[in-house]
Length: 159
Image (cartoon, helix red, strand yellow):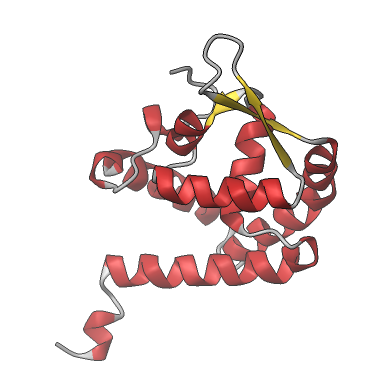
């Protein structure tokens, strides 16, 4: 095998694309002290207030251990609060704090700028095809993930 052949393998390209996506996100959003995974968690909690950690991990396709670590960091930054469930005090419901809500509003423009930069090398018509094919690839292989997204990871699906 040659390096040229390695550089044409889908898995290798996806790994490189992930590195690039994270680098661009951090360039655009670094001033907000927020990682892409923390952003995903905040967004999901904001869209589904009172979600529990298990459901959150399914929504953003993270294993429960990593989700727990992410939540600890967000809680330490006072962006997320855990509230005991009225039905079962052992279950903690997640909500954005006022600071978490404000941060999501503040970071929105930078996140959108990062997303545009990631696909900027593609023509507008290619971007749509790329997103469609990437979505198809991810959804078709969802069950193979160490942390599959629940129902395709759509935030509007109820568990």
